[in-house]
Every structure is written in C-alpha cells, then in structure tokens.
Image (cartoon, rainbow, N blue to C red; front, top):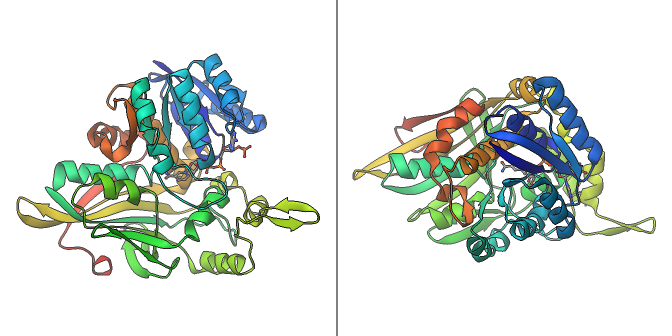
Length: 403
Ligand code: NDP
C-alpha cells in the first residue's frame, strides 16, 4: 500500500496513471501532476469514469526544483514516477534527494539545447543517491527498459556469455495521417535525425543517420525495413553486460514517414537552433511540434501492432546459441483498455511494473540503477499480467541480415 506521485500528463503519463489505478492493492493513493492542469484533470476524469478510482491532481513546473519540493512535501509519496520530458530528469532527481523520495524514469536526461543522449548527467548522481539511501531507477520504459531487462534475463538464464545483441523495434501501426510521431515529436525527431552509432569491440562506430537498413520479417507484422540507429540503452548495456562484443539498435520506418522527414530536415524544420521569426526567437522543431498531431490524439485512429525485442547470440555450456525474445502489442487493444496507442502503452506499463518492483521490495538498493542491473525475473514474471506478454524462441543461427 503506497502513495505515488506521477509527473507528466502526456501519452505515457495517461497510461501510468491508468495502470496504477488498476492496481489498488499496490498503489493505494495516486497523485498526477503536470504543467497543464487541464490535461491532468482530463486523465483523472477518464480514470474515474473507467475504474471508479480517484486520482488527485496538481499543477507543477518540473523545471523548478523549489516548486517540485513543495509539491513532494505536500503529497509525501514513497516514489516519484517521472514521465515528463527528459529535460526535467535532473530537477526531479534533485527534488527527490531533497525530500527523501525514491525516483523512476523512462528516458535519460538531455540538455534542451543539444541533442545528446547520454547517461553521464544522471550517473553523476550515484553518490548522492547512495548517501541518501534512496533508489533511482533509470530508463524503465520499453526501450530503454524492457529491452534492457530482456538482455539481463538472457544473461541470467540462457547464456554464459553474450557476444552480440540486436534490439529490433517495429511499429506496424497505421494512424492514417500523412506524418505524425508516436511520442513527443521533438524528442522523437531529435533521436531519429541523430547519427547512427553502435558498439563494437569496445568502440562506438558512427554512420550517417538512417544509412544502414535491411528487411526483417517480424512475427504478426511481416516484412519491414529496419534502420540502424543510436538508442540510449546501448550506452548502459555496453557498460553493464560484461564481455559483449557488439550491440546495435534497429527501428522500422515506412518510406512515407522517411520522405516527410527528409523534406522537413532539408527545409530546416527539424533544427533545434533558434531563429528569428517576426521579431521573436523560435525553435523550428518546437514550431513543427505545434503543427503536428498530438501523439495523445493518435490512440483512437491507430490500427496494427508493435513488435519489440532482442536477438541475442553467445555461448552456453561451450556451445553457440541464438535466442530471440520479443513482445507484441496491439494498438486497438491498448485504446480499449486505457485510451492510448501502443507506443505510450508499451512505455507506461513497464514504468508501472518497475514501480511495483520498487514498492514491493523486489528491486532495492541505494544509488542510481539502469534496469539491467536489477533482477529481471520478478519483473518479467508480472509483465504479461500487466498487459505486455512476451515470448522467447531459440533460433538456429543469427538471422542473415543481422550477421
Ligand atoms: P508528452 O509530450 O506526450 O508528455 C510530456 C508531459 O510532460 C506533458 O504532459 C507535459 O506538459 C509535461 N511536461 C513537460 N515539461 C514540463 C514541465 N516543465 N513541468 C511539468 N510538466 C511538464 O510525452 P510522452 O508522454 O510521449 O513521453 C513521456 C516520456 O516518456 C518522455 O520522457 C519520453 O522520452 C519517454 N518515452 C520513453 C520511451 C521508452 O520506451 N523508454 C518511449 C516513449 C517515450 P504539457 O501537457 O503542458 O505539455
């Protein structure tokens, strides 16, 4: 029985609040706070209507530590679940330290003015959290999150040593718009337009954005073009999975999506450099975000499935072995259950499952943790019941396009 404070009322915040409300035996008291009170209140009203539970609401500026500390003192939660934007990670961590509250998020800190996905800023909090006897769990969405936990499970159960890891993220969903992003457009486009980077033999190898691609056949989705990208979980996995020789991340994009993206990039609309427009400084990417469909609005329109997982190759008992572990999620089912599309759902459910692990004492410790450092078994034991059933198969060899 625990009180939680959820910060952020976007697509993911909606799922987190819903799923906490659906587990009253663990989340006895739920608070949802964000910058725009009307969004928080809308989610609370939807939850009341669908589950009968009351979610308490508050307005907070999560860029402001004083504002956060005041709210956390008033609410007195056991845990803060941060599903605002990556820009707020450090202020929320500071406020948790000041108030003595545990912390969990789904995306690593990024400075607003440079598109850099690195854990260094949050890893620098290690000593502070250790000294305070508090736990900060980083990156507990799907990717990062479940993909790290899948890899930890492979390490624990199926392999003596992992040689290669390929994370494959496919979205076979269609929302009917010419162009829209499935989560925050600013974060999404910053991620996709960044140079591709993968880990190989102790080094990071860089190639130009979206230049390496292959066709991969996904269960329940079919053939999709997968593009090599950098993704933040590679950084912590390369550090925490000892002896791994190569780690890569692949994501699917349709030709239509990429054509729109190329045009927007070519005309400067994806830039994060401020420009002067009619006497006012504006950031083109933020303006683009304002004209694109709100990701939260895609839910009722999106049909199809996502399939995200890991192909892992290594050795067990002296023999070569390859495993594929993945999760399939249906956009329309998610909408029916919590009024969300599958991208927010596959992020929010792991965040709530991670919160359960912390509140029930399956995950404990003082310091800053990436999820692969924690026991994968209790998490994977309940992930299916929480809404994300997963499966694993042994493959005869690494699929040819991933060799
Ligand atoms: P949205 O943009 O839909 O929601 C973000 C929410 O945070 C909004 O409600 C926004 O408020 C609020 N917010 C932003 N700034 C502040 C602030 N200064 N103070 C208070 N609230 C603030 O994003 P998503 O829900 O799609 O994503 C949430 C998080 O999940 C992001 O960090 C994203 O990177 C991460 N994510 C992780 C994934 C994973 O698999 N690990 C996958 C997808 C997303 P307002 O409503 O006023 O704009």
